[in-house]
Image (cartoon, rainbow, N blue to C red; front, side, top):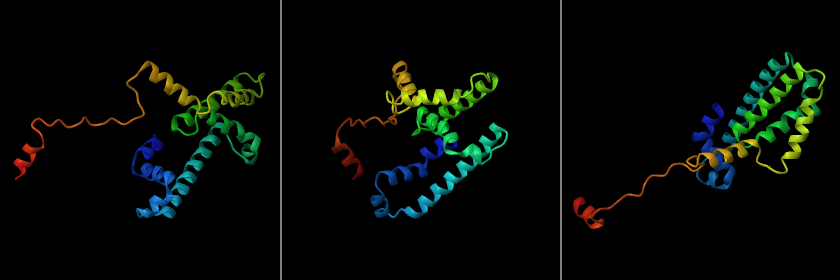
Length: 170
């Protein structure tokens, strides 16, 4: 929720503008170095929180838990969920947690996380935007009122034309 709030606020607009054109942002007087430093600090805080939550999930976390092949399922499930959206990252995290809980209850199916992650990586060929995009498309099919576009204001209606507005102002 915090990430969604930040993306829709002033900071999110600043990041979108910086992503679109850094030169234009610098021309308008935006401090690129300050914004990049804020992004770095925010990402470090989010990584620290994620590490604490991951340690709570595993019971303890050590250097072995963060080797490349141990972290690859987490990355692939986040990409499978849709890495460009907050809901996609949430879907990937929930899938990872669900697979770990399922594997804890059924120890005979060891490596279930790796199998499902591999199958998910293959399915990315059909849908490179992730599951969150697929879910949002299905929801838009059933609920046509949902849209990514912001609501627009209706066009103003002039009853007697511009002359009346100019005459009343004088």
